[in-house]
Amino acid sequence: MPTYFSQPPPGDVMTTQPWQPQLGSPFDGRLDLRFRDAETERQFQREDFGRWILFTRASLLLGLLIHAVSALIVSHVAVEKVAHLLTLRLVVETPILVLIVGSTFTRYYARIEQVVLTAVPAIAGGAILAMTWAIDPPGNYLYGLGIGVILFYCATLTRIHYLNLAAVGVALALADQYVLLVANPVPTGPLIAEETYLLVALLVSVFGLYQREVYTRRNFMTQQLLRQETARANALVVEAQSANRAKSEFIANISHELRTPLNAVIGFSDMIRADRAARLGMDKCREYAEDIHQSGEHLLGIINNILDLSKIEAGKHVLDETVFAPEEPVEMAWLLVRSRAEEAGIKLDHALAPGRVRLRADKRAVEQMLINLLANAVKFTPSGGIHLAGAREPDGGYRFTVSDTGIGMSAADIKVALTPFGTVEGALSRKQHGTGLGLPIVASLAKLHGATLAI
Image (cartoon, rainbow, N blue to C red; front, side, top):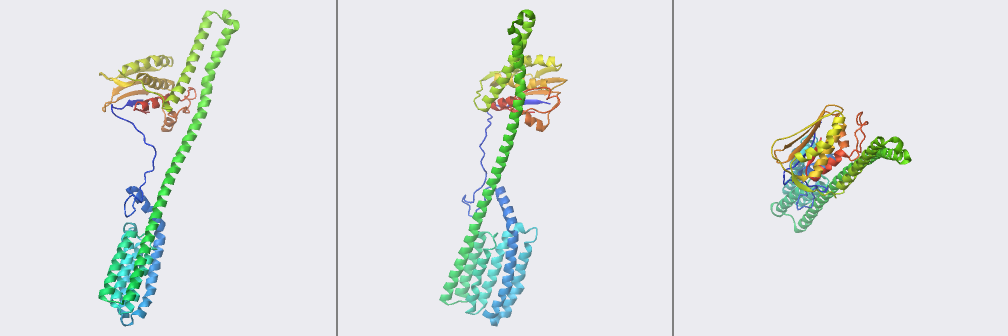
């Protein structure tokens, strides 16, 4: 499985931004209160439409019923023209309103909703204007009060946009002015009363719909933020649980890693200390001393890894950048890992792309990354070979690649392996003890360089 980290070209900068909710606001200068983000607006419309569709249908059906019943008024205010007015109301207006109600049950209604709902006050109000024009006083200004009733009724059509109702209401009010002042004049007293009533109806209806829109959009924003925060909190819980598991695994692994060399140090030094050196002979003492030395180096390596990772995660690791050839860290890593590979019977080779290349990085950190990758490959490659390669990228960066014939890892295993103190369970991994810090250190050091680690 190939493992590599690559350094970006000079000038590339990796930045991270703190989490911020990306929501539009209904108070961003838009008169229609729409969200700035188009996708947020579409989601709001979908949810609001689904919430109110049944109520909208019920309101339209109720309005149709009231319209039919109110036809009885015609016989009282316009006896002489009752036939013509009933024809206008029941033959022309009513079928159109029935079609409007029926359109709400079609799959295309969501696309034409505002057109359909705006047509309700326009058609009903237009019919009342026609009747007001045709009826003789005093029936004309009594019937004209119906426009105000329609505006009040439209406030129950919660999905009609307040700007649309305002536009239709103003048009009806102006037309009503013409009818009552010019086409079919009425006395001044009734005229003032009707116009006052009409103005109040228009303002109350439009303001009520505006308030509903503001409240609904604010509630939607609150729900969106709550969903985001809930998702973020769940992610933090999962992360905390993962960290807790990693801590537990680390304690279990580190106890073995520390106890084994410490027992060796204590045991061999005790044999030498307890006046047994003369009986053991110098050769045996040297062997024990070598075991003590190796155990001490192993302990120091574990402690250094823990300290290095803690320093990186605390943001206190400062890179000592110099300019060097990629062959230099490769040769150092090669020398340190080659003996382990030979002992394990694994073939280890390396090859860098020809050409004069200079890297600007922390040389010691690059050596540590290569050593960790090669050591990890040796540890989990039961047989076969390991190949280290390096080449310049087309964008000016440089990529080191370590490939092996080892056991490999699944996507889930990779995620665990990149978690500090995380160890992948497996038949071979159980034989190879470790702290689970090798790959996380590589990933952290690569990130400090503005590079990436991919497995």
